[in-house]
Amino acid sequence: MDEQKIERLTDRQKDCLRLVAQGFTSKEIGRLLDLSPSTVDNHVTMAVQLLGAPSRGAAARALASAEVGQYLPSQSPELADSGDSAMNPSKAEGKVQANFGQRLLVLPPVGGKKNDLDGTSRTLRILQVAVLATASAIALTILISGFFRTLG
Image 1 (cartoon, rainbow, N blue to C red):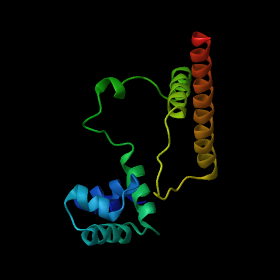
Image 2 (tube, helix red, strand yellow):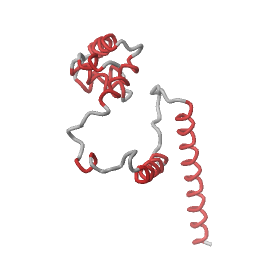
Image 3 (spheres, helix red, strand yellow):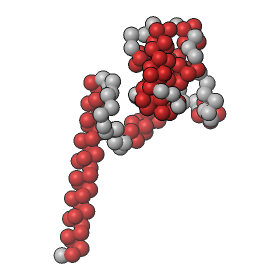
Image 4 (tube, helix red, strand yellow):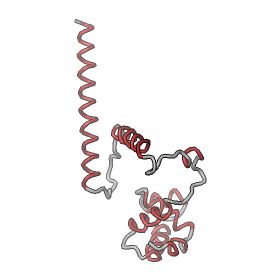
């Protein structure tokens, strides 16, 4: 998307698009921003038209990608100057692997929320649930076995 188009968005439109990118519905966004759902829809529709995006999701992704390289005021200086980048792949790879291990142990959200995961991401989420279910079953089996050994 053109950076000039992004700059033409109002702050309220940007707020709405950021929440759309996080998966919130118009009703939820309205509650968070103290707006009616129809007002949220109006802001999002105008933003979609200004950006020339095919959908609200595409507009939200365009805003997110435009804001990726911008400095965040809440970002700590240590994080900004950590040196983990493509220039230092060994550190970056270690962090990616550690983050992947941590993300593997987090349960995915459950509910009727629509997702836009691609096939690979969806498969990884399914594998996450399978691994956690298997680990839970093994832990429960060991716990029960240990309990009976202490009694017997």
